Image (tube, rainbow, N blue to C red):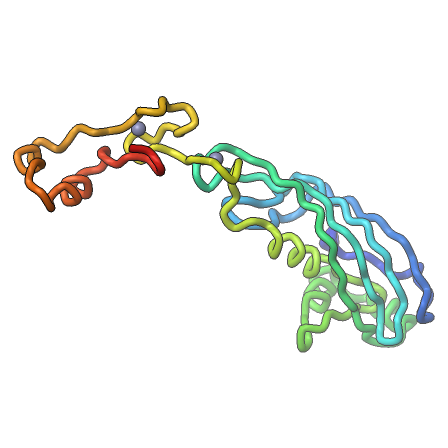
Length: 210
Ligand SMILES: [Zn+2]
Ligand SMILES: [Zn+2]
């Protein structure tokens, strides 16, 4: 079993505060990241540029995650794509002496390592031996910044509730005025017009149109 693609090794980083290593990670296959309406699909590449910096307590990871989220417009349901370009930073505390850790890592199964890496202690992330799991901060950077109600355009007018057609494709005067025959006789009476509109689907004008 292979480790999660988000797990990297700080093997090349000397354990001396101030030491820095520049790294880059390209992930082609991963779990979908995001929401039902908008997510980075499983096969959408994720590029991560980051530095590992030795600090007193562990390793500070600072980077940028770049990818593309795809989904659909919350109003007109057209497919859309949104560029993801988000910074992230997190401190990973050392767990034990790295030489012991390296030996210990070799004995552990991938599943055990992943379990240990994903454990969080008081919100603090930690290393397991020389390993660092970037998934948490990357997932947070993506999810906290994706729009929950994505729109193809801030002015998207959505769909006509009467026929489901996009307002962008409909004539200015488009509407569904026919009145349910059961209410037709009452339509002239004041105070009942709202009732008639609620009575049956297909009679509602779109937003901002009369
Ligand atoms: Zn739209
Ligand atoms: Zn319509």
